[in-house]
Amino acid sequence: MVKDDETVIEEFNELVNMSASELEAWLKGKESESSGWSKDDENQIFKHHTCLSSSRKIIEILKKNPNKDPSKYDGEDIGHMRKVVSYNKRHLAQEKKAKQVTSSKSYKSLKNWGHDALKT
Image (cartoon, rainbow, N blue to C red; front, side, top):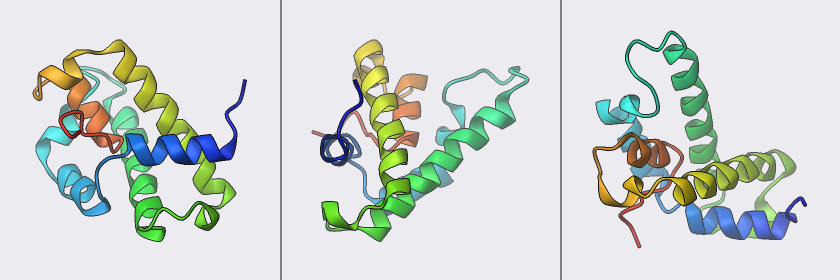
């Protein structure tokens, strides 16, 4: 069953617990590049590009609507928010390391998607 837009917006604003500036700063660091695959993975460039594309869209959404007013999101925003919610919820459910080990790929990957597992 597809979640309604209101639920997606609410869950996005709960799960994306980093500000646009925090996410931008994280993405500038080397650690953000070391999530989700090994250096010998031939698809590394594609995967990192996909993650960066998502991260940039998250930053754009956060900057566009800093007060998180639900009426300010458009269909494109909500479509991407839906992907972010799905990704973050799936990985938080599967990967306990994300909350325990900040050097883990799980932690870094979630952070690339706007969720800092150490924040409450």
